Length: 293
Image 1 (cartoon, rainbow, N blue to C red):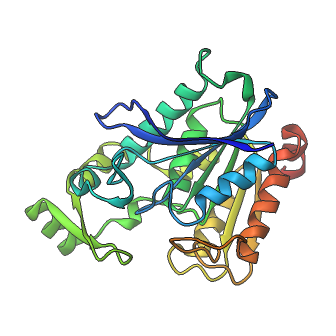
Image 2: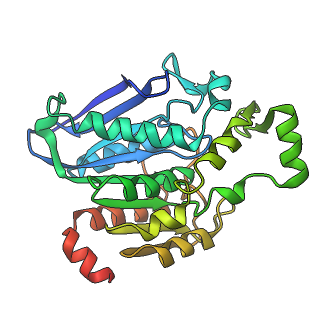
Image 3: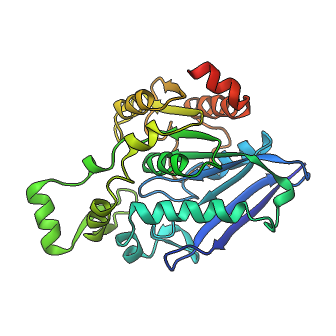
């Protein structure tokens, strides 16, 4: 049976910009476990092999959803490039948490178009890099989430802000810039990003959120990750009450993937991650928790 795909659906968010969303599933009217995928910093739903990843999960019997955070700089008109750099500058962690909440609320509506395809008792969230931190916080807040998978996840947001002189310089100018190495673009961060974090520091404490998790948590990290230290996943493992740690030998931050991804097969590191993730998600929740105590 062919896969059904719904591309670039515009879901209404809470912050004036749509949450661009894709669905991938087999239209067989059988209830399926749901996977929601959260991209990372400078990421987007159509990066690299995320589409092929969605196809893989759909063929394994899941209902897969990936989306762009509303202020990630990608527009509906061009889903592959950062065209709205002002939106990128206005992004913050709270907006990303709200976007994920909007997606969860939308897909679980009783009149959701594909409700017959969903096993709403199995709502899984996968987050990559910064998206792993967002997914962890949301999983601690929303009890409808039943399993969590973090890929190359950060374990702390506070340490990623500049200190002292650089912070003061940012405050004075109101904006700082980071170069997107793929495109050469200078992408802005408005100072509201920092003030919004300060105003919500307790909620945005990933360690607090991880310790409050009541669900199985698969923690995946590559041994050669130069973007997020493997120690971040080590901390998540220490904090999570029901953790399963998967360290991938020789894997980088994206498990051998790149953008664009035009090959039919995945790198062996990423194939391994996908196979282990499917095994984790298909296992009985209570059995998983019992194994992880």
